[in-house]
Image 1 (cartoon, rainbow, N blue to C red):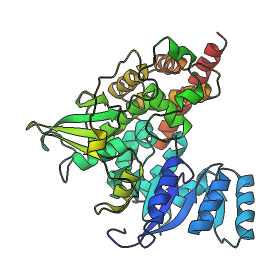
Image 2: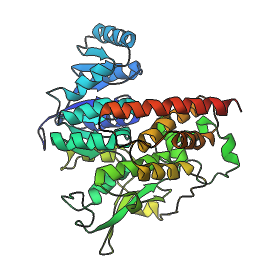
Image 3: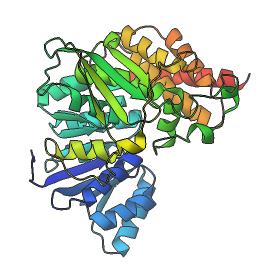
Image 4: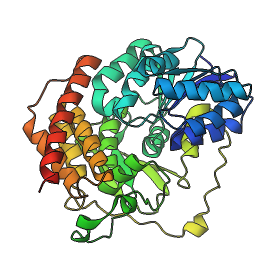
Amino acid sequence: MSTGSTVQNLTILGSTGSIGVNTLDVVRRHPQRYRLVALCAHRQIDRLFEQCVEFQPPHAVVGEAALAAELAARLLAVGCRTAVGYGPDALLRMAALPEVDTVMAAIVGAAGLPPTLAAAVAGKKILLANKEALVMAGAVFMRAIRQSASILLPIDSEHNAIFQSLPSGYSGDLDDGGVLGLYLTASGGPFRLTTLADLASVSPEQACAHPNWVMGRKISVDSATMMNKGLEVIEAHWLFNVPAERIEVVIHPESIIHSLVQYADGSVIAELGNPDMRTPIAHALAYPQRIAAGVEPLDLFKVASLHFERPDLQRFPCLALAYRALKEGGCAPTTLNAANEVAVEAFLDERIGFPAIPRVIAGVMDELPAMPVPGSLADVLAADHRARVAAEQFVGALGRQ
């Protein structure tokens, strides 16, 4: 596997999304270090076309045959030799290509799980920006990582900060590392100060207007409900082998401290920086080295002051639901994630209001019986399907009220 200054062969799953675009920005700054082998997207073929022309990868993948044919014709017309595939099977192949060293897993939602798992089984260095791989299938995914000796590096700014702040060579044993617990920081999103009464009338556009980060629509809504932070709590549990009661969420509106680790000797170690996803991306791409990411250095005198608050679970019930799912275990996190995806899509389509998102999720979690820890990807996908069917029924009932 390529390390250090050796050229790394890279597949990007989700190259047209915000993480993919930021990854390419870092790669663009270091052409001697990285070679793009495959760029994978869903429907944004205009942006994917531009990326293929610039980086000339041997492979590209889109979601549908018609889009693949259109992209292939456009690339051929300009002399770009990138071969274009389509569909889930093509994604699996790109994640496990023998010549690929590193896979940026940045497909949003459950669709990103199978190719990310394929990369783990193939023993790739995985830069994990897809929360669902761990939220839906934590036991299955981490087993694959251990069996293949794959390298797993977190891209979420919070988990990347914790990774940097834990003891060198951390083994997954908090007590052995002298660690008391983790603090995951959260901006509080666009509705941190909105009255509860006014939340009933917020629009998708308002929910997607994050005060600090530029993100896709789904993850922006998750930030507004703080489900994003709840999913990150579950993710931190699997990444760092930490129980729910030793993971605390703290609202930090400035988004300068990206997360913290509290130690038994009284120390608290944090990672700070401007809110720019290129920082954790560059850290993971070059690990254990450091490379320039194009991010402005942090000016402490300009920041001047930092603020911290406990999250209000009446305002952010989705956070409480995520803690509940982690403590219930088994398929509960899979159910939580599937119901949330359905509810968020319904909100973005204006079929339900913003406060209905946690109502749908809670209803599905209450309705579906507790299931054991999934033993395979098939088990995970079956639980995901059950939850989506139930969530659609709840959305339909709420929409008729």
